Length: 135
Ligand code: SF4
Ligand code: SF4
Image 1 (cartoon, rainbow, N blue to C red):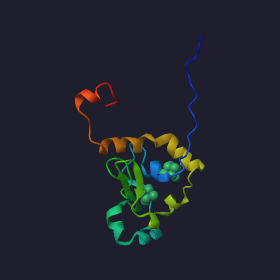
Image 2: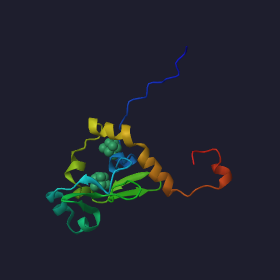
Image 3: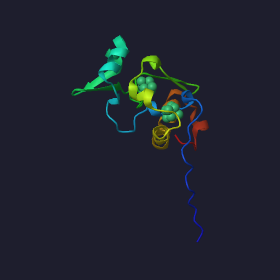
């Protein structure tokens, strides 16, 4: 019997994080809080923390948008993902090295999330064009 199973290709990191954005999305089902925000992180964000940081009990984290994206993520419809607070982002974001094990794990688990967010930004086509597609 011939097996149709194809070993999935290992996750690979792109050369430019702004074409990816995966680690700025929570896994589906995560609650309102994402990347942890320490006291130092909060101080670095200054006034922007009021909008971007949420507390659950005594733990602070970056607020999530309904799309599952960190509230600081700016998504351009052509497919660019940038951080609005890049210079002052939380330490957890600073520590994630592109191409490292944590990055590859993010891509393995969640690369579909930025793609879905992009699709939701783009104008939908008419019913005839969309027939037979994923949505
Ligand atoms: S660190 Fe990795 S997961 Fe995060 S945006 Fe860059 S390539 Fe994507
Ligand atoms: S703070 Fe910036 S780098 Fe960190 S998860 Fe949010 S958008 Fe991404």
